[in-house]
Length: 128
Image (tube, rainbow, N blue to C red):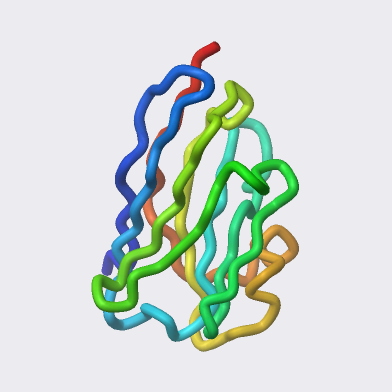
């Protein structure tokens, strides 16, 4: 069963913006930590943003000040607004959720293997 579906990826020039969306099924929405990860081939997935049950967010140092995670509870959708994109932001982007756990939501990069549900990913390519 598909619980998370990402969209919004694409190709953009450096300095541009994209907004990623992740529609989350009612079955898992807001029942645990939710987060955005990204992965470059050959590297491990990197946790770049997380959100807790109170709506507080955290962002990795590599994207802080440029990316913003948010959610819309009515639409059961997560967003990742990405501004001032750089070529090094090129990656496959994934949204993820935990099952019934609010532990360490604001440290997704430390919790990679604790996320139970994953979307299929959306590719972001930034050219210089």
